[in-house]
Amino acid sequence: MTNKKSAAKGVSRRDALKLSGLAMGGLAMSGMLGGCTSSDASDTPVVDEGEQNSYFESLDSCYPGEPLAENEMRITFMGSWYFQRLAQACNSVFVEVGGGPDGTAADQFVFDCGSGITAKYNAMRIPMSKLDKIFVTHLHGDHMSDLTHIYCFGPAYDRKSPLYVWGPSNSGLTYYDPYRKVNRGPYEDGTKAFCENFRKAMRWHTESFSFQTSAIDGWTRPGWLPDDASPVGDDAENDAYALYPIELDWTVEGGVAYDNPTTGVKVTHFPAIHDRMGSISYKLEWKGLSMIFTGDTKPGNYVIRQANSGVDVLIHEMTTPPEVWVEKFSGLDPDTTDPATWAAYVQMAKNVQDSSHTVQKAFGYILSQLNVAPRLAVGTHFPATDDTIKDALSDIRLWYKNGDVTVATDLMVLNVSKTQIHQRKAVVSDYVWPNIPQSSGATYEMPLYNDGATSDPLAQLDPDRDEITGEPWEER
Ligand SMILES: [Zn+2]
Ligand SMILES: [Zn+2]
Image 1 (tube, rainbow, N blue to C red):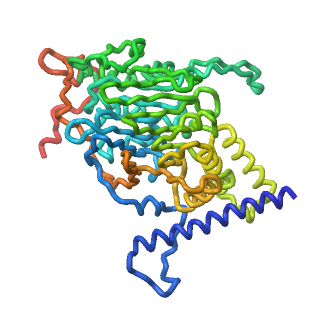
Image 2 (cartoon, rainbow, N blue to C red):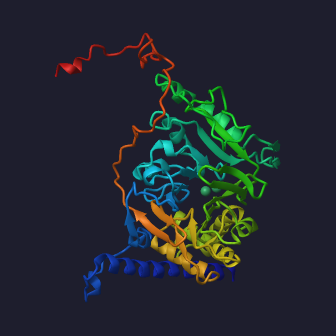
Image 3 (cartoon, rainbow, N blue to C red):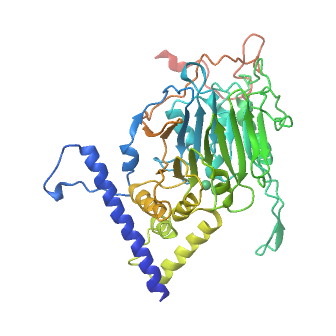
């Protein structure tokens, strides 16, 4: 009985995926081919519904560097899944608010920075100076791995400010490990400890760059920086390599993470339910517009309370059903796999999801529970292809019948104003060089290693090094 049931479930999910993929493929093709029609079905190109995102491709195009209107918020997805692949880096959401000079952002924020996301920021021509405020939802690698690149290379480019990292406090967890028969925890596993250890781990890199000093001339402490925030390690507070952790109590609902009266942006945080204690979600409010980014979470009442009176954009994590995980990750075919084996794999996938994630149907349920629907609901942390998207939307619609919903993928851009939310796809070059704006203003003091007037890039090399000298290659 069990076998029959699980097999039937697998097949039905699989058939639904196949059908939905074909439908999406057909839609996209009719859009792409325009007036080109064929009476012979055999002429139709074979489309693998798991290899394309025709919804995203169908969006209007936009290009990097577009000016931002004074009352406009722009949300760009720079990473949208948890295992980086070429189409989707790990997680990051970039939020900019208008009001800066000449159509620039008055303020901007990085929410999570998983592996691969700096390539997307670079493709969007976002200079390193704009990646100075990082809000981490939790310390899983797919949400913080690219901190390495952001931290290490910011000062060598144009980040003439320290790096500020918000994130959850220690989990406080202790538990008994039955295999090793030892107690585990409590560990120093919060954002402050992470930054302290991270700073140490980056020592070789930062010293290697110290022929270009990173002390910032004329730096003043930002008014929004909490009084008790200070750099980890021994960096001066005005050093571009200074790393300021701003730890947020993960148990608090509605705590203030950032409040900037100059730009009008306020960021608050609330608990997420994910894997173990110590994950949070963020809500950003500005000039009557708002967005929530849950990060990873199981379905929770926190987000319902936070979004209940209406947010403009609700970005919530979402996962496919466990059967899809099994089929996609393992390559097992439910039609030919021994039913007990299939069921065991599905149960394993379900166990992971149950501890940590929101299945797509549950996302629909959450949306249906809100007093005021968000103007746009976005599922992310999701492998976005025609088959999975269509399946997700049909599950979401079981509960949430009418509101606008979309599924994020990298380089999806949302222009949010009071009157509209415009979803577009950014068209970028694969070959962008990082941008070092010359007008950034701030300058560095003298290098750490300098011989008076000039820096000495050779100061840290082995004096006994066996180097080819005299540049003999210049003879040709
Ligand atoms: Zn994740
Ligand atoms: Zn996670």
